[in-house]
Amino acid sequence: MPLLTPDTVYFKDIQSTYLKPGESRNYKFNAVFRGVVNIKVLCDSPIIVGIAASKPEKHVIKGSKEFNYQVEPDTEIYVSIQCKKGLFAKPANTTIAIEMLAPKRVIEFYTKVKNVLSMISEAQEFYEVHKRTIRELLDDSVSVWHLLGEEARQVVKDLVLTVKKLDGDLAEKEYESIKYD
Image (cartoon, rainbow, N blue to C red):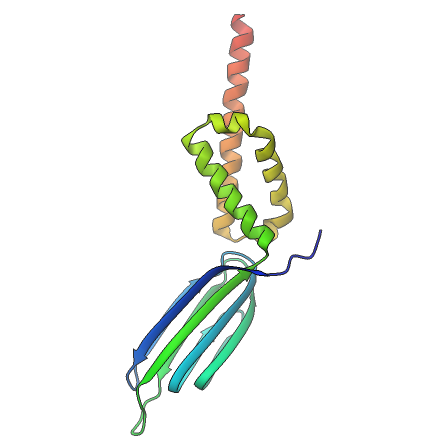
């Protein structure tokens, strides 16, 4: 199996806020795939940043700082920012940018599975036409299964159940046509 390096951004979010002295904000993100999370914090006055990802960290930042984490599927990432308190504390303009990266092959696989599942749900004839391609797609799931989160795994499981159901229906139809001919 080739080395799957996280090289494709599948989630990007930028949150900008104005914090008064002592005010805080909390953000929560969920990593869908195994990969890398990059968090960049920018501010014009000192703030306290707490990040809980693969390891918890707390820093006082003025200016900008970037954090990088290796994450497993379904890891919850919490980011807390708080403006400093005190007599000489000033309000802070803050921006948090978060990027989640995963291997391109995994993201493409997940997208294909979601699309195929929606196509089969809308038109079952699609399965008949693309049966071999769908089987190959399900065979590929073995190589990327350990990189998928619970949400992505559930989509694959739904596709497998749908394919089994359609194969069962087809087998019954073939049996009935043989039985009555």
